[in-house]
Length: 483
DNA sequence: ATACATACC
DNA sequence: AACTGGTATGTAT
Image (cartoon, rainbow, N blue to C red):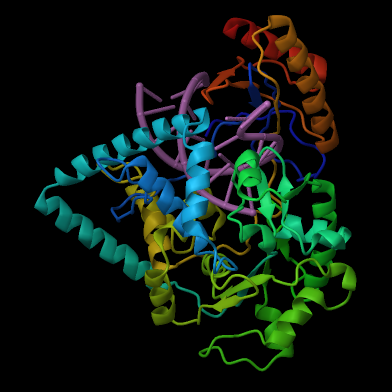
């Protein structure tokens, strides 16, 4: 990982950081624009060895027809909490009618086909692996697995709390008259729907026009991110009593606590039996000191010996549920085999880097560059075993690596209009860079057209980028070339 | 290194 | 009329 440094982020002074740099960016285009600055990837060590991954349930290679896929998509959504008694046939029908022939869906299908090709390629490569190679790989995995088991920690009590229907809960808190009505936060896209709306089939990630079609009475309210940050901060204040280092997830709607120390001090707790927060204690966790904190009466919690498992557990038993993974190897493995692969987080070298390397380091370095190894295999193995040493849920305290500004605007091919749009976005990005105290090193212009095709063009490295003017100067040539 | 894609909320 | 926006990471070339 190149030792590029930049006049990076002074704000959160991290002493003499040799840390990664950052950048600034902007974008514009005929329908949508998205711009961002990125840095060279963290690089770091990637592990090798050979473990199995499993494909994300995307069908399509000779799989079901498109409408069957759409139906399957819906069925999974109807299985969500609070969706009993929903007329799934009808909803599937409406979703198909309104969205199946959209340019978005067409683009999505194209992406899916690319994934299928990649999967086919991997499977073909796998088939070519000889039996001796397989045996060697099995031995490597067995050895690594033994290492991981030997270093497995089960004494911690990690909790991930998920603020259910968070954005909608905040909206309903402020406008109680909306609470009984179907409500969606968002606009072009549904970010969150309350449980009333979900009964109509409205769900997050759905395009707004489909949601409206599903539920004519649906009320939309725009997202208010500053407010969410505020409410989350208030909730964190409460959680801090239980874990001074409590961290908040990116979208503000979840946080992670390590209750190990709190429980040792305050509660009689049987390590072998695990921990179940009593309803009362959980309520205390959520609401203890202030009613201001009454965010969502239906928060979920995952409780487990590490944050990987706690995060996965928070997704079980919605709404208003909690799931405990007991601190035994058997319980952990049983939980994993009962949990769809889809629920596991993607293996990430960065996560691995973030973990103390007691167990990981040596074998990682040794196997990284061997040919024929599956990248990320060590991470996959860790996830498969439910092994995770991450100290926290979020990456609290990590230095920001990029900052971006994007905007969806009306379709246009007018160069002049696009330049104006670009300028507006440069101003927006400049302002957020200023607010964040960031200076850019590298600039990327991203353009999305009306068929959802995305182009990204990077400016050659140059002087630090700090203002709207500098952003524009670097971005404009990129745009001109695309006109 | 660049472009393109993915995951997550 | 018409499928977000922001950050970080992964893959292919």
